[in-house]
Image (cartoon, rainbow, N blue to C red; front, top):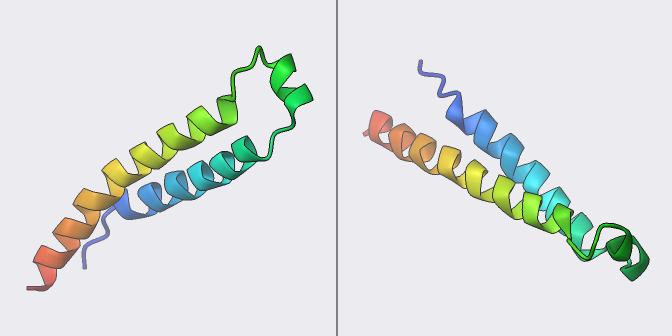
Length: 68
């Protein structure tokens, strides 16, 4: 019985990252002008996906070793 906290944290950050990337791709040009042409949703979404993967990959690796 091992609860690896990295698994739910990685899933949560990855999910929020995907939602932000989708929001980043659907931003209108007027909204982009107001934010100084920086698509912050896209950049933060990619960062959150990267962090989520950093948490998920070791969690899934250790999960596989525990069952063997």
